[in-house]
Image 1 (cartoon, rainbow, N blue to C red):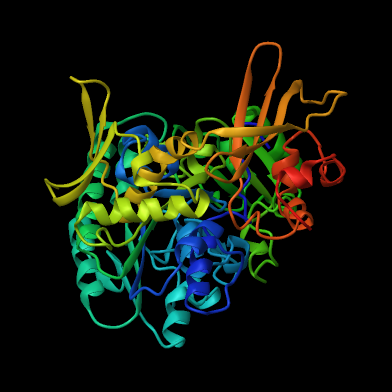
Image 2: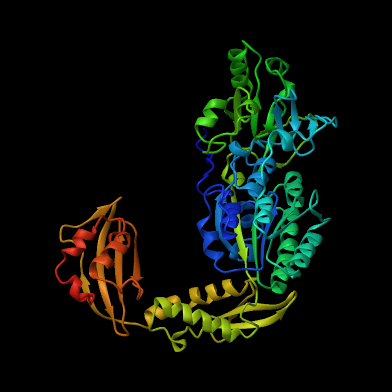
Length: 554
């Protein structure tokens, strides 16, 4: 596999999102959950909403909206897509919590042995035609699966789908948001899955995964405004936003231009343009490999389908019984910006399905009720102070950096949280970042945390750095001190450097960390104490005077 590609991480993948939602509803997940999402699903909500924006990968947001955008500010994590990083396998994983090898909705065009044809999965047509593949829907009949909506409904809760294709039909991004809002206003605990595909179409036509493009930027700004407005009107709701995959700009190549290569195949290549499956005629594998290397060597990585399975590209769980027959003999994965196209004359500027970072990484964005503490800004400042006190018991409002000011002001979409920073008597910057109440509190804490630390001056230090010196990866441990502070509390200060640069960090220990015995402290803070320099709990346990310095009597 190309060194420029990244494998899907099924331990930290889009499948964790639906599994966290199942866990929240007290339903057994189909696989690993997402820890960051588990942490924010921290109370009972009337509404849990999952909105999937097709193709809006991590790089699409960072390149076209930037780090100060509301979407970026509300990102709690980024995760890998599945392989292929494409709509059919990825949205099926988002709807089920299953990996592609488990649900077997393997790509846009999939070979079904029972039909003897490559089938365009969603439309149930024979590949590159309008002809129905069978009297029944092939994927739903031959590889059925239970959605998380099915399982949530069976558990006694309401669940809804909002999309252009099934469930409650939506006609635009604005209509999607409108229908989400209407459902959240209804009584009862519920789950809402919403999907909007327009972003993927725009990216295919104009690009935007690798650099800023006006067409996708316009869509994202408009979608972000509508979503921020929705969050200001939400009550008792958590809104989770993600994507099925990202995008990367491509140049296209057409296998049908090479008649000799196509003659070695039993049927058209299938799955995805950047992750294609090849079914080779009996006795012609050597010829196929030779011709493929001649035409596409260096542009695609070719491996046997068994190798792809062994590497866990399609998942790490037990495959569906029908899955192996869908993969043929070989899988070709695009390197760099190459992409097959199985339809002559059709062109795309951007594509997906492969293993580049731009295709594989998608954001996990969370909004909670915007004004969950009301519209008095003092409530949010007070809550930020309460949370600071849990880590820094000496924290007081008088210690806040006076250069910052916090307000709730009327904006284009109604009231919004605003931060001001005064550089000097003449220059003040205003930041209206579309933050909800939770993120606004987090931002206040981030603004003030250093100031709270500096307000508690050091009164005594104990140097625990070894006399013999410690090095790690070319860095030398220069300082390792425990500190006692005037207003109470203890911290550790670590400084290290190499021949050209250096860095330092101070760790304050919370009251909970200091509440037990000295042994409890060592056991729970082993990684923090040793850092990367291998100073073990045994070293700290035997360091003369450390226990007494930290105030432990047992």
